[in-house]
Image (cartoon, rainbow, N blue to C red):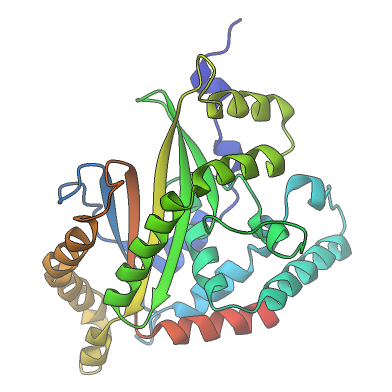
Length: 306
């Protein structure tokens, strides 16, 4: 009995993020493929509201903290913990990793990991946190590396993450484009290919060999497709205008105001991409307005410290 390439490269077993956690904390307007760039898809995400009309940034932060073991550790480092104290040790070490780094970027990077697995169904392929906490490792490059086999196109999609949480949409977009340009101008693509080869996260050696074959573009059959997955988070003043809205109308009112802002957001994105030299690459862009980004970061830092 032969095994098709689609079956051989089914990466869904590597997905570790809880889709229930995603659906409890986040929602999305319809993804938009019809804008200025034919190779980009926009995902207009937003936080859900709790029963008291509060955006669920604390619940989201805690959901991310619940995934620390999956996010931080490769299979070889995890082993096969079977007892509660073994899971507790790994969780404690993962939280220590995040506190050791101590940068504001960790909240955004982990949120992007969460979205890539829950929304795009693209599992993490390198546990970069292990590299960041090892002083002998180079940590240049993307904010995350994920993969997905695209059955329709018959291609292995690589997603290189870029997470930006800023006070304004303008600075978030500017910093995103600057990072993407640096990624290519500094030759970091080949660096990232090397990271996958050296620090592949999962234990299945047969799958690893098949992926490495597809990543080798100098050999026949090597066929992978480069994608940038970007998270653009920013403070949105519209939250301040919702204080007088009743709780049963809150979610619908928020979505309508968000929808009304989409033409502006698309125009801003199109303007930033207009001069981007590599815009023929593929992009998955997650747009996510917060009441304040700092509010979410603080909640994340607290959840990690708990």
